[in-house]
Length: 205
Image 1 (cartoon, one colour):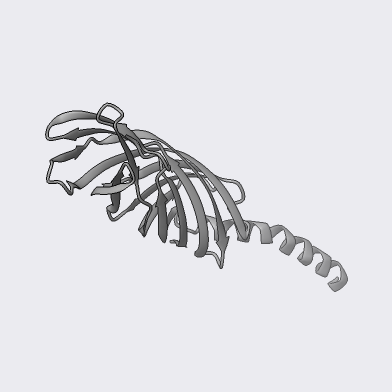
Image 2 (tube, helix red, strand yellow):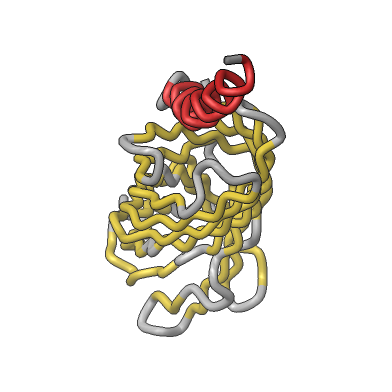
């Protein structure tokens, strides 16, 4: 009887293992938080204002970012990127002309290709909203940059350290176009359209 019982026990255990693994995965919270450091790199030529007499360029900037993701399913997640306002130097015709801060939260729908693997690639498509703060011109003129809405793209990779912790990197593109006013008068449009490079540490609750 013992010889018959042993194979049946092994079969029963092999059937239960996938169920136990699935239960362990399902026990994880759908929430994931990441903290990272990001480089925001606006495109090289941001446009011309004042009847195309002033070429505008914005500097790169590095700063902390955070994002929170909610997994609707193991593969699909909603992700919100945020952080402190980034300050950029504004150059006009190659010389410093002022500075401005911008806050560019991005809401994305992500698809995670291999959510249970050690290496977890994903892509995202989203919407960017950008508002500008503390706009200043060195010559004392009043600068105003209008808010912007635009699409955003993302590709990233997480490396799972265990069931909860990950380290990762991602790259995002955001379309940001702002209307420029100087002393209350329309001066033209500036396209920032940055690439955002991020290294992060994540925790799945």
